[in-house]
Image (tube, rainbow, N blue to C red; front, side, top):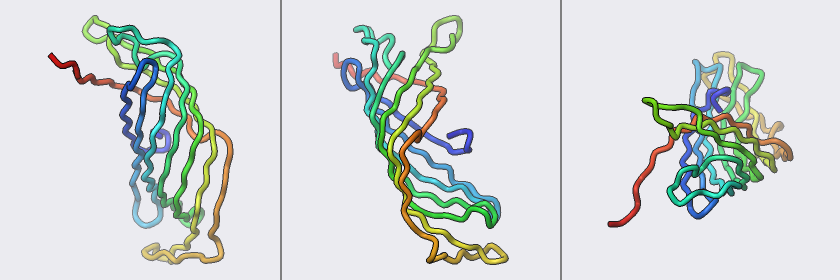
Length: 173
């Protein structure tokens, strides 16, 4: 998402031995004048299975190879001068494969900071509406003849993530 200047935030929680649930939120919302905008708001969950078992101390959680299933929904408004002018909604569902590895040391001690690589593939469907800006770009006119639904099967996400974990002690004394 960073390559497309799309800010995102994810929370991943281990829920059982070798399983975790991740929820992501993507929210780039920028525009420059009236000519250019990249506005998306999307969210969705992902259930992951980690192939390496976690040891009882918790070391190694959320590390190694994983596979998952995801779902996502979003709204968007994309405008690039008069070349790209679309608004719409989409939903997607599919599978994810990835790998996570501890990458650095802090103050001479191992850190839980990680690098995560993942690729998702699945089905995506979008309902889109084309619009035409006026000459001054201050008003958008809907093009009622250029609307529709597009379906797609193939790669849907490729991510390189820098993960900063934080831990909450939930043990009762």
